[in-house]
Structure formats: structure tokens, C-alpha cells
Length: 143
Image (cartoon, rainbow, N blue to C red; front, side, top):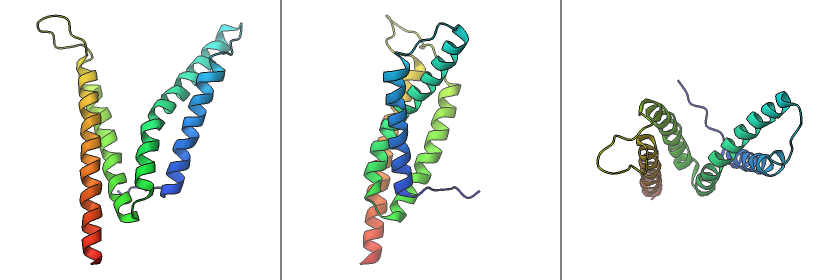
């Protein structure tokens, strides 16, 4: 299966568009209420979807901004990693129970929350190492 990799400019503009849509959803749709409960629930679901896209788009924007200035070969390698990492981490989060494992005292974080934070920090660390190594190999190959 060949993975479609969007060009860097399109990906950057798409994340900016999602940030703008999410910002509009947070500011305007939250203030807009209608007396009819059917329409209000539809607007609420649209608002929640756009807010989710907004919160997802902020880290994607910064990652895209960093990779925008890289060589195309480095960007393609990073994009393939980020695509599969995202899918696998979401699937893994679905398999982990939501409640904490228990133990002594009150738990402050659920198992899913701990896995999500670990996955996020691992993603950042692996991305940095991958970008550095790939940039170095491309640079050394051209010498």
C-alpha cells in the first residue's frame, strides 16, 4: 500500500485552516444558542468536533512548521513515521482501560492518560532523533 504524502505547503495550510475553524467554534458557536433543542444538540456536536480538530491541529501545526524547512526526503520519512505512529497509538489507547490500576492512595491519572502522555513524549523524542539522523544521512550522502 502506497501512502499518500501531501506536500509541505498543503499540510501547513490545512493545519492552519483547522486551527481557524476550531477558534471560530470556540468563540462563536459557544455564544450561539437556539431555543429548539434539536438544533442546539446538532450545533453542540459540530462545536465539539471542531474543538477536537482545533486541539489536534495545534501540535500538528508546530510539527508541520518544523518539517516545512526540511528537505523533501526528510519530510517524507518523518510523515510516514508520524502517520503510522498516530494510528498505532490511537489503537493502543483504545485497548488500555480508562480507570487507574489502583494501589496505595488516590490515583491522579488514569491508565489511558499515562499512556497518552508517554506516547506523546515518545513521539516527540523519536521524531527529533529521526529528523536528525535522516538530515545527517542526506547531508553526508551529498558530500
